[in-house]
Length: 393
Ligand code: FAD
Ligand code: DHB
Image (cartoon, rainbow, N blue to C red; front, side, top):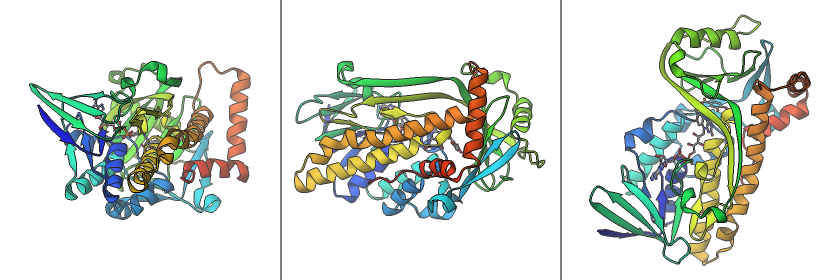
């Protein structure tokens, strides 16, 4: 059995765990990151693509935005589609801020590379992790791999291991309140080798279901289709996917998405989920370990960054001034922002998707809401200020 000591033990090397480890390092606080998967898995998993203004600023301030500044695609607005007509929501004009399209796996690559060049202790394929003595002064993480057991003793543990990780389930259920909502649909997402033929993302409401036109780089497009929650991917040939994308995304001005080789297909479930509080003893939850949003508002990765911003600040005050106030307030501070992002993600999802059980009244109300958002500067500004990211402080 090998024993290790660190100040903060971090479970999970996704955006939350890696960014936290980096922010702590900048404040002279040591951490060990324990990750179940291989480095290549973390670096290649295609997920989020939109960084809020707030997240871009955070990555810049943290000195990890060199490639993001070079390769990220600045988007000054999005287009909302209704009945084949597009209506632009001009973020910069309405809020003075833009968003940046830059793949989550690129952020993860940049953070891993920065941590390793700073001598960070990242342990990929670490083995099976369990958390102990969370309510005591010296919690620990046990890591078991084949016949080998490591014990990492820490001052604090950050549970950054995503929705299916072990951190949240290490907290006794009696200590948590769960808020949960599932949606009666999912997204079928593809990555295609096709140059984007539109400058901005298109969120399209269509009578056959929602469709999203997005991108990753000057060569790669990312597209999504609303589908059944139990949709069988095997039933979606490349031809069927393109045909459905043409039908739903086709615009009255004749624009259609450009086709290309489909590099990847996948399904994403739609769920809103929050646990309260984000703290149990010396364990702090951050990112998807504590909350998930349906992807329509592009908030998941951004919320993960906001959580670790607050956690790093709180730990800095603790170590520098021996002041617990921000650690004590961590959960409430995060939750205030999390619930606003939950509201926005629920609202964007409800605005744009087709609900099988919608009554004729619901349908009329939904169309009226879309017409309102696309015609009222006040309504568009509300969408824009949430999409570019609410301020952190
Ligand atoms: P994760 O990225 O899930 O990282 C958790 C890490 O912990 C993983 O590496 C995992 O392997 C590891 N782990 C799990 N269990 C253990 C264990 N027991 N021991 C050790 N390690 C463990 N968000 C946006 O902001 N914008 C978007 O445009 C967007 N689009 C999305 C599109 C799709 C298709 C999907 C699926 C998600 C999207 N999201 C988006 C959400 C975003 O990807 C997540 O919110 C984000 O990954 C959360 O980061 P995290 O670090 O909290 O968790
Ligand atoms: C992407 C994903 C989203 O959920 C979204 O709202 C916008 C873009 C994307 O993967 O590019």
